[in-house]
Every structure is written in C-alpha cells, then in structure tokens.
Image (tube, rainbow, N blue to C red; front, side, top):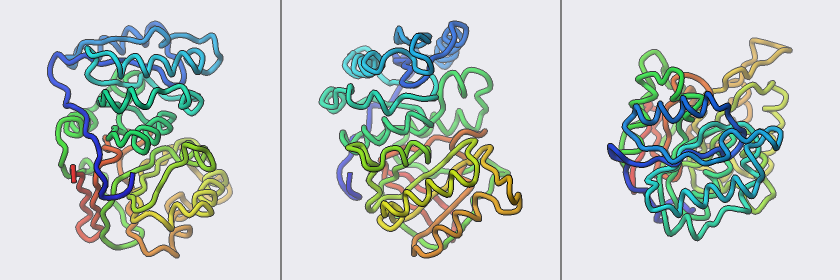
Amino acid sequence: MKEGGSVIWPKKLAAGSTVGLVATSSPITEYEKECSIRSLENMGYRVNAASNLTDNSFGYAAGSCEDRGKWINRMFADPEVDGIFCVRGGYGASRILEYVDLENVRKNPKIFVGFSDVTALHILFNQSCHLVTFHGPMVSTNMMYDFDSESADSFARAVQDQSFEFKNPKGFEIGVIKKGCAAGRVTGGNLSVLCGSMGTPYEMDSRDKILFIEEVNEPMGRIERMLCQLKHCNKFKECKGVMLGQFEGCGNRADETYEVIRLFEDFLSDYDIPVMFNIQSGHGKPMLTIPLGALCTVDTESKRILFSRS
C-alpha cells in the first residue's frame, strides 16, 4: 500500500451493531468468554462469538491454524457481522495467514481490532486488501477488566471518525528523538511480529510510511537484534517517520541507565526522519487506538499527530 494510494475505510459501528468475537492466537477461559461477551453487550453491541475461543487443545493456540483462519473468513463473510474484535493476543496469528480468504475480505471490508500478535493480520489486511484496521484494545485483556475512559474514548473516536488528532492523555507527554514533519500511511505494530514477517510473503512494507512500533517484556539485547534486522532490511531507510509506542517491561539488566529510548536514539541517529516516542498505544495503560493504513501526519515542533482519510 504505497503512500497516497487509495485505501478502504470500513463502515462505522453503531448502537446495536453486531461484533464478531474471534481468537486468532491464544485461547481464553470459559469465564473470560462470558465476561468478554457481557462487556461488549454493555457497550451496546450484539455479539457473535467464534466457537474456538476456549479451545486449548492445540497448546498455546485457540484451535488449529485452519480453524482460526476459517473463523476470520466466516466473520468477514457474514452479512450480519458489522465488526470483528480479537479477544486476545498470545501466539500463532502468523500461522493462519495462508488460510485467510483475501478476496472475501476485499469484498466485505469491516472494522478489525486488535494488537500484539494480531499485528500479522494488520499487515496482511493493510497491504493485501488496502483495508484500514485498528491497532486497539483486546476484549479480554483491555475491555473486560478495567476499560479506562482514555482508552475507551480513543477507541470510540478511531472507529467513528476518519479524520482526527491523536492526543496522549494528560501526564503522558509525547517526546521527540529527531525533529521534523512527515506524512504517510501508518504501518507497524508489535516489534517481534514485524521482525517475524521479514523475508516472507507477508513482509511489512515501510516504503513512504510512518512506522509505529511497540513491544512488551523483551530484554534490551533482543530488542537490539530486532532493530538490527529492521535496519538491515532497510525498513528505517525507506520510511518517512517513526512513532514509538509503549515498551512495557523492556529493560536493561546490564545498565538500567541505558533505556529503550536511548537505544532507538542510537539506531536512528543516521536517518533524517522525524521520530516521536511515548505514544500511549501498546501493552500498557492507557491503550489508545491507531488506525493502521490511515494517512498520518506528524509534526515534532507542535508534537501533533493527525490521522485522516486522505
């Protein structure tokens, strides 16, 4: 999906809309399933839950690769389903990509929400179907327990408005590593998953894009190796700007004074692109929503981030 190219914005959700609840990666418990459905119903949605949400017969995955892929296809094809929400992340989403019916997705564009391991599906839908998707809260891990007002408001704004300004909540100032202004379609997500796509038919394309990155519970050494991989694949060289989200639990045991942001400063020092950090989206709280595939304009002087249809 080249910058400036046409993209498809899915139809907005309304009160009474039906949400398809899917498990693309790891399963949840029966109790979590019940609470997830109740949470969505309390938000005013009807719920169509996939049958594999609690299937733990495949170790860390919610059913077989084929079964998880089929549920994605069923939800996109079902005319009564208005949007598709992922119940959680975990592991295994990359293994279902070959089972997704892309023509079905193109013919039936819908709101698709999730993050973390779901990054693999965001890349697929953004690049192969030109569909805007939403790096946003999971039902069982974000919406179910304590869906704070900042996260809830950000989610509602993102899925309802096709042009809006992204703002961190008070107390979370956006930081700047490298100054500048840039515009491009936004791509990215979880760093580990992005690196896992390299060298595959599903490789993330950062050309002329604003690259968003977040991660959780990775030691500094592994983050460094992953950044090396992106650098050697020219992902920083080809992009127009970088937004760094939350890096929860990503520390440096050898030297606590050398933090993740310092690592990014070192890696990106040779690139003449704007770089902003502390974007409140990822595995932390609040968890704000980013419309992947939307046109994104960043300005480090004003610290503004704008998303728009074109």
